[in-house]
Structures are given as C-alpha cells and as structure tokens.
Image (cartoon, rainbow, N blue to C red):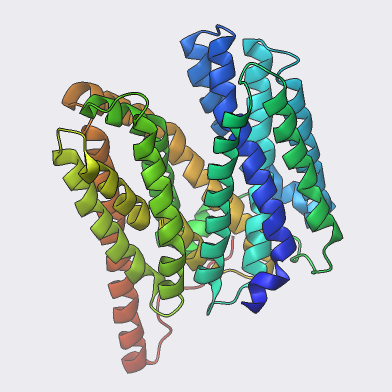
Length: 397
C-alpha cells in the first residue's frame, strides 16, 4: 500500500509511543498499590489522565498551529518522557496525579498530530483502510507494551526507564522523515458546534465510543469476576476484546471506503448490540464469554475509526487537527462519565448490566447513523427534482 509506506516513519513513531504509554499505564496502578496509596487515589489516577487529555484537546490546535506538526510532536513527547521518569522518583499521590494529568494532556496533542497527519495523506477512497492500519498498530503496541511488564519487577525503576526510552525513541523516525506535514490548523481550539454541523454522526459516534469503550476498559474485569472467572483468568476477557478489535478495524475501514460509512456504522453497531445483549444474558463463565468478547471487539470497537474517517472525509486539510481534537474531546467526555454510570447500574442490576448499557448506546448510534443516511438520500433526491442544493445551508463558524 503506497500511502502506508509513505507514512511508515509516522507508524513506527506511533508504535513506540503507544507501547511506552501502555506500559506506564498498566504499571502506575500496580506500583501505586505496592506503595500503599489509597484506593481512591488509584482510581483518581485514571481520571486525572482523561482530565488532562480533555484539557489537551482544547490547547493542542493552538500549539500545533504555532509550532508546526513536527516541533509540536517533539515537544509533547519530551514532556511525556519527563513525566514518566519522574514518577518513580517522586512517589506520592499529589505529584502522581499531576504527572498523570500531564501525560493525558500531551497525549491529546500527540493524537491530534498523528491522526491529522494520517488523514491528510489519505483520500476518501482509502481513508478507512489506512486508519484501520493505524489502529492495528495501536492495538499491537498497546498489547506489547502491557505484556512487556512481565519482564520486569513492578517495584523497580526498570519499567519506568523502558517506558521513557520507548517514548524518547518515537521522536527519531518522525524527525528524520522527508514526508511533508499537513497544513497548520485554521482554528486555535476545538469547535464542537462546527464539528456537529460538519458530521453529526461522527460527533455522536465519538461520544458513544468513549462511553462504551471507557466503561469496558474500566469495568470489564469486574464483569468477568462477577460472572465467576478467577482473578488470574479475568484479563483473558479484556484481551479477547482487544484481539477482536485488532481483527475488525481494517475490514470495517476497507468496506467503508466502498460503502457509505454511516451504513457500515449502523450494521456494525447493531450487530455489536446483539452480541452485547448475549453477554448481558449469560450468567456463567466459559469459552462462549471469551468468544463473544472477541466478537464485541470486532464490531463495536470499529466505531471511532469509522466516525473519524467520516468526519475527515468532509473536512479541509487545514481543519484536520481541529477535527481530531474535537472528536477526542467528545471521546474523553464519554470515557469520563460512562464508567461511573455503569458502575451504578452494575451495583443495582448485577455485573452483566455493563453490557446492557453498552447495547443501548450502540443501538442508539446505529439508529442515528441510519436515520441520517436515509435523510441525506431523501434530500439528494429532492434536490434533483427541485434543482435546489441538498441538505442545510452552508454554515461558517
């Protein structure tokens, strides 16, 4: 794939970044527990990361516009390296919360740079497949980073050092690439109303993806334990979802390059909602639970890829950072709010209520995507008859 080879340096950088970040992401709660930090603090460390990421989505367009893609990327990565290597040196709740927030902040900028770069080099004919390749790199790096912790003692400096090394090395491929970066963003902050008007299905899809995925990552192990899995086997369930996600993103993206992306969203999310309903109905562990986990990852975890591709189909080159930051902002809102709601429903109705909530979310976005697709087709047919432009009047923020 010619476009993939042109973006090879960026994909190598992404792999190193995600591997380093996922290693420290799984290490932090383990080390916090070993250091006898309160359970509330350990929970807040995850919230601090997403809160920092939320703030980063507001600031990253202005930073990228001022410094350019490559220099902004280097600055973001440099801050992440400092945050990671300071963590074991200053092991206390307050600095760890601040450092996790800083990591979330800079990774919002890193995602804005990398995703806008990929979308700038893609076309509407290959955007879904190319973004699928990017997500496969993400999943592979995330899995590799987490598994690498098995090589080190969680109580030592070594895993923090390795994470810092991986993050620092990620600057090298992108700094040496001869591929031109995208145009700087027009706007200095995310423009959510503009994004909703540009691609309402994408905006809603990013919010739902954050809500559903955030709930699964936060509470999926508790679902497995509540179903009767042993603590040592519970990670098999979340790993099955990751595996299914890696299998699903490329085919979904490839199909969406040939069929309206909203139709693929509707079909994939409706199928995912049925699978989640099956998980909701199960009351005992077994191979079927693991298989359904793979299938849920294969279907529902394609949503953010499809939503991002659809929004960028409609955006100008100078708007790509703004689109990425806006979608990530909505994703973070969902990821912050939904796990709390899911924890309450699980307390009231049992662990399987996690997937009841996600089934409702995915069925809702499937219906919305299908409704928008039908409405746009009806508007296009009317425009042929009346000679008037289809859809709403152009809107400039």
